[in-house]
Image (cartoon, rainbow, N blue to C red; front, side, top):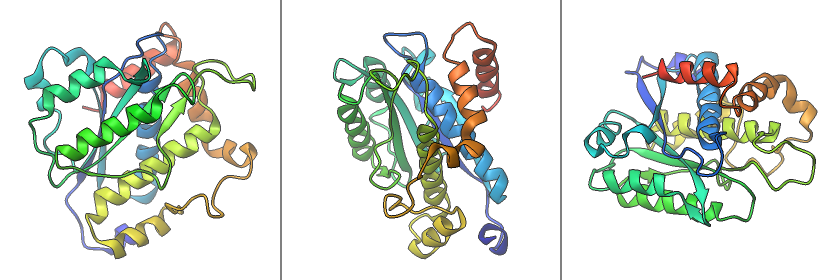
Amino acid sequence: MLAQAQAPQARREIRLISAAPSPYTLRRDSYRAGAGILLNLRRLIEEQKLPLDATYYDAAPLLNQPEKLKKLLPGATVLMVGTSVWAQGPSSISRTFFEAIDNESLAGIAASTWVTSGGAHTGASLAYESNLATLRSMGAAVFSFGQKQAVFTTDERINGEKPGNFTLLDLWFMEGLAKAAIVNAMALGNSKQANELWQQLNAKPAYYLGNFPKSEQELAPRFSQMREQLNAAANPKSKARQELDALLLNLH
């Protein structure tokens, strides 16, 4: 594999920060979506034997402590911030987070975001672009998984999907964003290495050109267990939520 053939590298960190408990429910959709990205990252890092670490922080308890929020930034090669939609745009929680850190420089860091929204037309794109614009204004080189905005809708469905549940396709896109984060963490502007990494990870940024999944059945073997874990954690009193909280607390 590519990562093994190259000279040893110092370990780099992909850091996820959740800045959005849901303002309307206790499901913590954005927090759980970030966990999905993280679980995919950890699996890919293990499968590919990559010199990377993946960490996850919950910024919500620190909103009134800007100095502690700023300490969440240094040391990451890739920074990813999650939010939820509130009144057709980013929640006040995520804006409070960015206002606390916006004097910090993110020069030399690659950054992205993910967003959860009740429906597909409830302001998610505004929240997504707002986050990227703020990260870009701080000096970060922002990225996405191809043309996909990392927006995960959890309500307003007509196919019988339970509110708060992620789909198998959601998990596939979470993995795609995780792969993009890996490429940005390891290639650091080296386009040749980036293309080799995409090939190693069996993915392409232009996923819509012949690489889009054909059915849920082909996604089930890889993502069903992870999906069940995230969806069960929508209940704040569930054992699955307790296990997820414990997992993330141990990643710092």
